[in-house]
Amino acid sequence: MKKFYYQNNNLLLFTSVLFFVILIPTPAQGLCIGPEACGILGATFLSIITIPICLLAFLLVFWPKTRTLLQGFAILPGFMAILTGYLMVIRVNRFDLFYVPLIHVCLMTAMIIVGRLTSKNTESQV
Image (cartoon, rainbow, N blue to C red; front, side):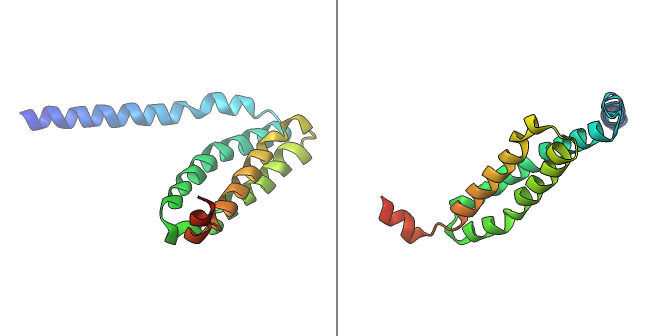
């Protein structure tokens, strides 16, 4: 009898998460009223996804052997800088949103600089 009750709790949890996922995009669809608004909305959502991924990639800094991988991961914010620059600044002519691609460029630059550090460079600076 206890297992049956536990299964109902899992079903209830799964159903509530499913309804949450289904109902969240409804307000976002109201924001997409034209191609310009859809470009801004799409670039913003992509930035929301990629910036945490890049920040998690910074965990590779702690191991000197994996620091060179950061230069490879710098492709992601570089690509996002180009994409958000096109979608938010060039296509829509919203130069007040220039800071969004600039965040990606700064993140890419930091990843490249930190990725080029070696243990010899850090020891000589100390």
